[in-house]
Each structure stands twice: as structure tokens, then as C-alpha cells.
Length: 187
Ligand SMILES: [Zn+2]
Image 1: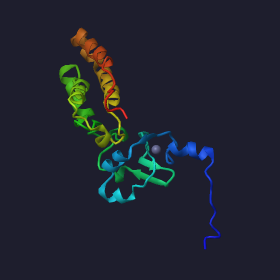
Image 2 (image 1 turned 90 degrees about the vertical axis):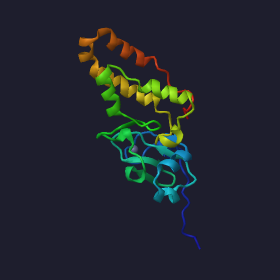
Image 3 (image 1 turned 180 degrees about the horizontal axis):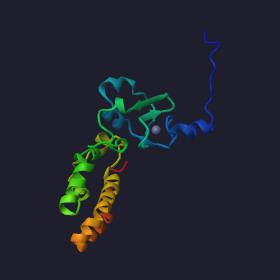
Image 4 (image 1 turned 180 degrees about the vertical axis):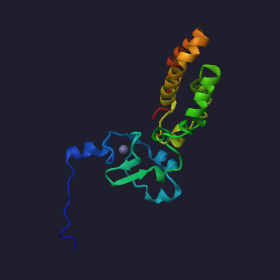
């Protein structure tokens, strides 16, 4: 019989630790099971347990999803998409629903001095065509990250663009900060 089995009760500290990535020790956010099911490769599907998974967003950490409870750590090799925020080589995806990358956003800004990425995503969201919950590895709307990325790209461009069209550049930068966060698909 199991007379030697030791039942270990979880301490409150251990429970609080469930959101801490065991690899990088950063706090992670909960991710819905449906997201994990869509993003994990076929060969990992059988390993999905009835547990709360977390998404590790730390750029330098290989772990994508984890559960400290089941001691599972799914890494980059276990997922079917390249997770943009963990990549340093192009193409770095910033929007998984409509395939926007850092390269395409930078190219548009270099060409036109502005970015239409966030506004085009907003239009798609309004039309009900986004599917962040199953396409974005974080399961969350990409618009916040897109805005951050585009704002950084516009800042890179501000000096040369200002020299050419002063008002255009400031319009581009001020325009982006007024784009709202997505209120529809935020999980
Ligand atoms: Zn991590």
C-alpha cells in the first residue's frame, strides 16, 4: 500500500507562487485554456491538464506557458507560432490576427512618416474579425503592444521626419497616443 506516501500540503506562499515563472522568476499572467489549446503544437495537446496555465511574457525566458501545480513548462519549441516579444530576429509579429510585424510597421513609417497599423487593427476589431484569444499567444488583445511598438518606431523616425515635414511628424506621434486600448477582446 501507499503507507510511505507523504502528503504535502501547499503553504500560502506556494499558492501565491503559482503565477511566478519557475525559470525566470518573473510574475506571469493567467491564460485561458482555449488559448493554450490553439497555440501549443499538436504533439503537446495530450499534455494539457485541468490546471490554470500562465503566460510568461519575459523576453529573455524560453518558457511560454507554465503551471507550477502540474510542473509543466512549455517552451518556444512547443508552440506553433513565433512569440514576437521573445524574438530579436525579424519577422517579429506584433499582431497575430492580421499578421502585422515590426518590419512592416517600420517600413510603412519610413515610407510615409506615419503608421496605420493600430487604426487598421481597430477597424478590424470593430468589424468583429479579431481572434486574439486563439491567435495571440498571450490570449490578450495586441493593441496595447502594437501602440507601444509603433510609438517606439515613430520616435526612431522623429528626427529625420521632423527635418522634412515638421507638422506631419508631430501629427503622427500625437495621433498614436490617442488610440484607445481595445475594450472588446481584453480578457
Ligand atoms: Zn519565464
